[in-house]
Length: 166
Picture (cartoon, rainbow, N blue to C red):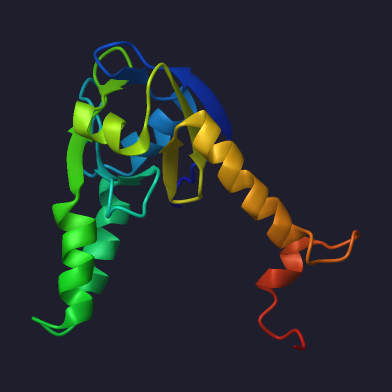
């Protein structure tokens, strides 16, 4: 069974862009890297995307391969395929966790999302995101506004029920 990312973490970023990957996230990265074995550093893919994306999306090798397979199913040369190839393949970075549990975020990626001395990690199931904490807080306000559309006793799990009315 595929392990999932869970939780949220605040991490320090040093002047060289080194940031620790939360230990729980490292276990998922290991399980999602078919080449990983004890003693090796797990690899993963960081997608930084286009100008509208203000966070980094991190995929296990297996999760990235699933997206790649879906992109490959699109007609070669189609606008959709070209767009996805650019955003997912071209604007991404394959990297690995080092022996100390850290990664180095290149200056280009740190600058893109405005990251300085702190990073906010949040799990999103089969991926996790890295945000500038203040940017995430602003985005969280939008998320809260979406939730406010539902009644006070709303159970979000009803969204999973495909057979519900309306």
